[in-house]
Amino acid sequence: MITVLSTNQAIHDLLADENASWTYNEAEALVNFYEELEDQQGEAIELDRVAIRCDWTKATEEEAREMYDIEGDVQEYLDDHGYCLEVEKGYFLFLNSNHYISNYWR
Image (cartoon, rainbow, N blue to C red):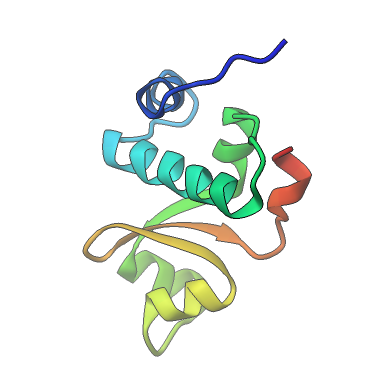
């Protein structure tokens, strides 16, 4: 049995995850990312908020710079090493390249 979620329902589901503490903008950015991925792959993706919570890291530009000892452009570095979503200017969500989306999204 499959339930198809609207964008707003998927955002609400991420916001309801008490262990993640996503903001609305973060949840919206994540849902938009996975909707675009669905369109690119041509197949539906199962929403797994636990996998999302575990795989994505949120950080300011300065925090990311410190974490990875980045000297150049932070977003470019994060994009080169995984997936990076700029939620707001200087504030990112990023998926480490060690994680493979296809393992979590069918």
